Image 1 (spheres, rainbow, N blue to C red):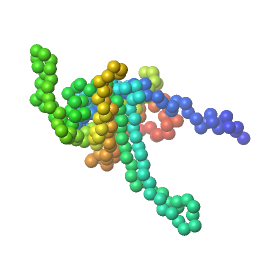
Image 2: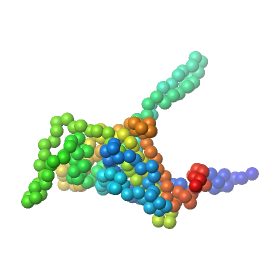
Image 3: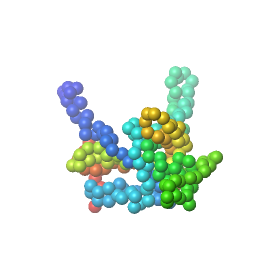
Image 4: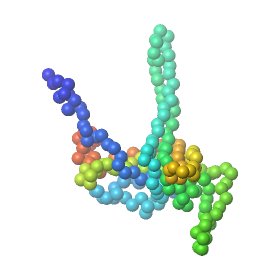
Length: 222
């Protein structure tokens, strides 16, 4: 009979404990499709800029938070102390990040909910001047976050793609003695109009391939 240590060795797999060492986030209009794969070839990531994705840039060290809050509905039965049926009736998905690069044109458009087409920089002074609208217009957009972990020969690449993300909060802008000028952005996620899915999840890389048995997915056929 196996002891607990033997059972633990068979049940646990340390290679599946991942920590995101680097991550980059991108936004794009809904005319740009989320990639079907993050790889154009083994070990080669797709060129997201060529596909039309714009970088969010450097973010604070607390990184990206992907929230998933469920709301359930219970049915009680006569003579039962616990619910006899529970159904999930609502799932609220959010993405939160604190951005440190807020000056790019597309980031200003995102944060302020406005179109800055036609706004120019003065060629002599470098000045950019525009009026912020009273009521922002925040359209749905694509949001894609890609993270990596591990060395090149055992690299894990993880991604979360959202086909219908809307910026719902841009936090406070603080000009103070300590810290960089930053904005906390909160996105609310809806199902994609075409796929019906709120999130496209990506897991890949040489590290994932080496851990294929532990992951439990069958390999694709040619």
